[in-house]
Length: 234
Image (cartoon, rainbow, N blue to C red):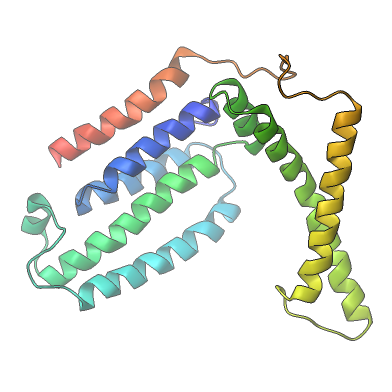
């Protein structure tokens, strides 16, 4: 999964997300969750980081279940015929419908995020999706600046603590100097690129070309086809 071209992987995940947004089938949603978790298990991801995302998704799904369970019209609204025959009670069925949708969307998002390298995704957006060069280089620059921003945030927080002050994590006294420095860094970077003769209209070569294989082109077709097959069978 990690070897799939990021741009085509993005398309292969977004299309199923759009489709299931209009499909109300609890069994299909849980099947999507099971498939995504199985693929993640064989993708050698960092499960510690994945659990940090999965736990909030599970909490949200429980909240959605309770919402659907408590507020329903007693007629299995949003539950498919096959699902309704297996689940007794409109409240339970409605709750499972909402909870399963949260899990399905979350699982597809985790499948993409934890099997995709951010820098490769940006390069693929330029090479395969033909995004504007300014937009792509802006993303690359912002990702490179993130570690500096995090380090500067910790330094500012430590400076306040040394003075006996303990502002909140999102306090303006912490974020304002950070924003000012980020703007200065971006201006310095833009000036450096212009001084080196950067021209977004000129034809450019790729330092790290993203190789496109037949399996990459087929990935969106495979994921969409499997989802449509699941809709028909379930």
